[in-house]
Amino acid sequence: MEKGPATRRSPTDPFPRPGSRAGSRYPSRQGTQVLVNTAMTDVTRMSSDYTDNELELFRKTMDLIVASESGTTSSTDILNSADTMSSKKLKKSEAEHLLNRLVHDKWLNEKHGEYTLSTRCIIEMEPYIRTMYQDQVKLCQICHNIAFQCQICDNPKCCIKIHNPCVAKYFKGRTEPRCPACDDFWPHEIPGMYITPGRSETSTAPPAGRRRPARAAAGWWGRAAGGSVRWR
Image (tube, rainbow, N blue to C red):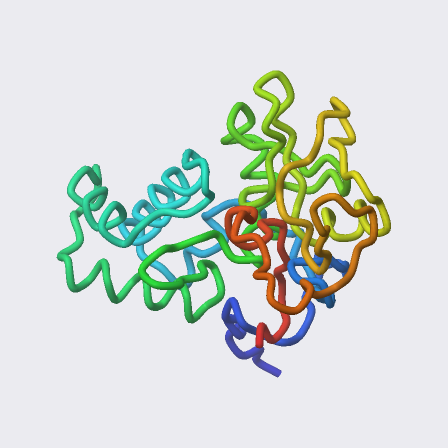
């Protein structure tokens, strides 16, 4: 019997493939269960769905996100980087369409024109990210996973990062949160906890008539999930 052609699977294929493994990560306080494809771990794994110049722009987008303090980059910066491409340049409309596709395929997240690496992207491409950006990437002090958008210790000699969910878990029930590395006072808002000035008691909501402090960590948690699963 003649064999038919192999079926090409898309990045959103819900069925696990050889080389994939199950895992769980916590991009939110509720947690997320994921399947991670370990067979291919760099940008070339996307070559069946994106052209070479599209992948080059995606790499440039990753460069911008990793290099930023906030773990985000704007659509304007991404479109400007398209002008420096070594391969065939993309028109503005083509670059915008590509960004929409990358968001749809769960490689990027977008909010108010700011782009971040998705949960899927960080986990599936973790070896690539650690190798290519080893001098720029930091790990969460608590869970030791890649951290882009987190709370950062204010001590310039420390500057550790902790994911927001890890912050909430680590400091839960502590009346005076301190950095787990340098023991300096942790000045950021603890997710899910309000500390009344001058009091040691904590609660999950501010007292009546008082507003919750506006100071908070930058953005969402950057350690994320990926693989052959549905992403909504």
